[in-house]
Image (cartoon, rainbow, N blue to C red; front, side, top):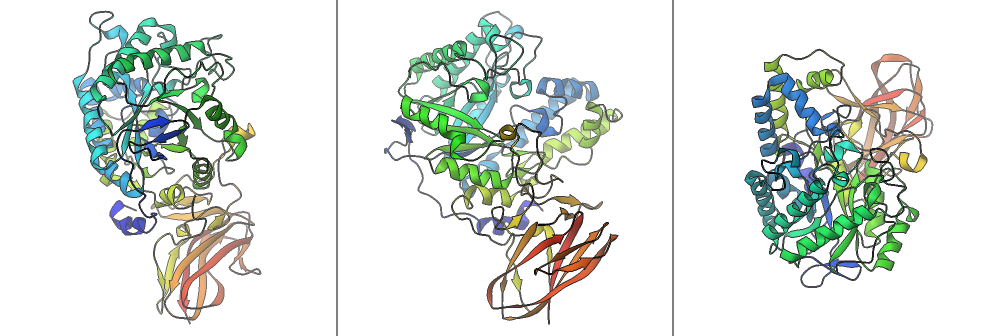
Length: 573
C-alpha cells in the first residue's frame, strides 16, 4: 500500500484542525502556553533514526550502536561508499514532505534527536584539545528542518539524544562506546556538551518556532556502579542535575526566552534528588514505555508537577500497539499533558510511516548478525543505497491505523471503515486484514493487544504476531507473494467490517479461510465449520439482511486454535 492510494482515506480520519498556537512557547505555572498566554498541548513525533541510527530501527538490534553498524558497513563496502550511503540517508530520511504531512495529520511539534557528532567532533578527535570544531553541515541541516517546521507551523524541539561520550549504559540510544569515558566520567565531555548547547541557543535565541531545548535525553547511569545499571536506584543523581543546571546557566547567557526541558535518571523517570527549580522557564520530561495506561502510571510525575510548580511533558513514548497508543494519549491529554511519540519512521509496522528496506538489506542484516554469508561489495552497496532511497517520504508506507489511534480514537471510541466502501448490487470482497479502524473490543478483539512487559515483569509480548501491515492486536502474516492475511484467529476473537449499504437487501456472506486442525467461525453465534485442511477454502457463513445506510458484519472465531482468514465476500441475492 503506497501513499497515493490511501491519501483520500487518510483525510477522512482527521479531526477538525485545532486552533494553532502562536509565538514563543513559555512556562506559566504548571502549563506550557504560547505568546498569547493560551495553554498548548504539544502533540508530536520524534525523528528517531535520522541523525542517530539505533540498531533496532534497521533490524540490527543485535549489533546495537550506530558506530558499530557503520564499522561493519565499512568492512563490507569501504569508507568512501559508506560515507556516500550516510549522506544519502541524511538527505532522504527527513524532508519537508515529512513535516508537511505531520502537520496535515494534526501534529503541532516535532522532536529532533541530535547526535553530537553531526555538530562537533568527539573530544578524542579534536585537533586541539579543549577546543571545539563546529561542523557547518549539521547546523545547516537543523536550519532547514526549522524552516520546514516554521512553514508548517510545527514547534521544533531540539533533543540532545547522543551527548559527547554517551549518557548511559543503554548503549544504542546514545551511540556510546563503552571502551571510552562516558559523559559522566569525563569533564571534557561535559564541557563540550555545555559548549554545544551554548552554540545552539545562541543560534536560535530569537526563533519563535523552536519549542524548547531538551537538554539530555534519557540519562541512565548508576554512579555507584559505573558501567552497570541505569540509574533507577539512584537516590540523588547529583551529577545529572548539576550538569543540567550548568547547561541551563550557559543557555541563559545567550537565550533568556526558550523553554529548557530536563530529564531524570533512569531513562528520564527518576527524579529523586531533584534540586529546587533553577529556572522559571523549565519543563520536566518523563518517558513512558510498556506499562499500564492507568492513573497509577503517571501519579508520581503528576504529584511532582504540583509540588514543583512546573509543567510536565511526555517527551517520548511509543513502540507499542494502536490500543496502547490510544489509551496513553487519552490518559495524558486528559491531565493536560502533551506528548511526543517515537519514531516517525523505521523498518517496522508500528509508527506512522514504514520504511521498506528493499530485498537486498536482509542479506546485510543476516551477515551482520552472524546468520548469513558476507554479501559481495557491489550488491551490498546497491542494497544500502536502496535503503537510503526508500527512507524518503514518497517511498514510505503510511499507516492510517496508527494515525487514527493517535488522533481520533482518544476522543472518539467508535469504529470506522478501514477504507471507504459501498455495498450495492455487485459482489464486494474485503481483505480480512482490512477490518475496521477503532479501539480493541470495538473494531476487533484479540487475546493480546499490547505489550505491558514493564508492568508485568515478564517477557516482551508481541501483539500482532506477524509484525506486519497493521499495528492492532490482530495477528497478520503474509503469503509468499507478500499478500497479507489474518493468522492465529482463535476462539473468542473477532473483527468488524463496515460499509455503506446503498440499498436495503439480502447478501450471502462467504469467507476464504483455512485451519489445519479444523475449527468454527461465523457472523452469528452458531457459525460454520472450517474443515481441517491447509489449503484455502471458500466457506458460506450466512445470508444477511441489511438496511440502507451504515452497516457492519462481525466475523468471530467461535471454536478455533489455528484459523486463518484471507477475505470476506458479500454477494447480493
